[in-house]
Length: 267
Length: 310
Image (tube, rainbow over all chains, first blue to last red; front, side):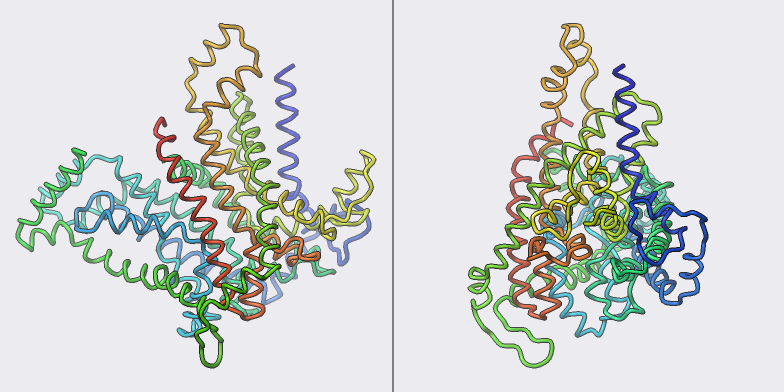
């Protein structure tokens, strides 16, 4: 009896969590201009892919997706690489000021994004970075959180491999690539997934740094469609398209994501 | 302590080595740390300090900048809308924090109760966490349409409740936005609680069962108190997150109706980037910063000790 209640609750909750996604997928298959006076207007009578075809033909939407890819892929790979190196430096290297620098990093992480955006807007206007990819790529090339995660991970790994390699005459750049990087792949994957999700889904920064329609990433582009009457099917198809990369990352890297959340929290 | 001493000895030893040898061991530090520190100074430290200077100036996009002393700070203390925005943000936190924690805990308890396909369901509950606010807000807007044909209005009609205006009603809009955030974030709260539940020793439960304790007693006397560090940590991060709420207000209500969903970050955005009053926006951002700083300091003070048992 207890079991049955458990399962009923589980299915009910799972249905509630999936319902919005169901509306998105079904609605995207429905050719509709105006939302009808029916709570279930989003269920398609004869599903068609015309909304998707419309988006593929519509140059500006594909441009938004391309913009999102550019401002996501470059930071993701750069973060994985640089956070791995910096995590290694702060976990294993001895140099003056190490603890102080790390302390400053941990203090700065408390500064909210929204505080930095105003001065950054003024700076980027000076650099002529407004409406360019630079504004969203350069500041995201590495991240304190990623450094913290890798450092945390490497501190739990003994120095034996490293020391053996020094004795064999390797320099530390070689050691990093041959020993440390392969060892820390799981945590580097975590850094990558975090960075992907935060860049791909970011609305606030591109909203401010990208003011021309052709420079919008897909989040800002979709936001500009939102709520306009006559766009329902297109809006859903656009949402579904922009959701596919997130979903794939989630499907294959969910483990790294949840492990990362736990690592960042409970240490 | 001994570790630190060892490190120092190692450092001294390194210092005595010839430069070439030291470089071989530390090349990566010289090659990567310095450029990163410069990057850090340009994109994090400088903006932080510059933003503070900005609060004492009238910064114009075009034209000369003037020093105006405390003008913007004085204005902040008299600005009724700024205080309304702070109040709205506070009310949002009230609506959001406890339900997010409770839902996260319930999800974690169900997942942890030995149901089949637990991993699969965990994935479903986690899905909104990785989905962008834009997608979820768009769907949320359709679900909570303020007409009789809205899906939620259709559902509550079965319980005899009249159709509600939801986002168009100034007393409900903030609640609907809080609901959206609860839906989006509960999955990550679940992950913390799930980890917490798994770290509770099984023997405790077995002992309680032998003593004939009831299920609800076991929960309130063993599970709930032992999750204390998790409660505390989750409370802190959801609090910090709730002060930064912007996306849903921007996407669904535009701060309205009648400023009912103008949160502090939304107000900052409007002042800074719609009215181009960047200096005043900087004052607001510092107000936000001080609130978050206080919450984080509380976290530092208590959490360090409490999580030691894990």
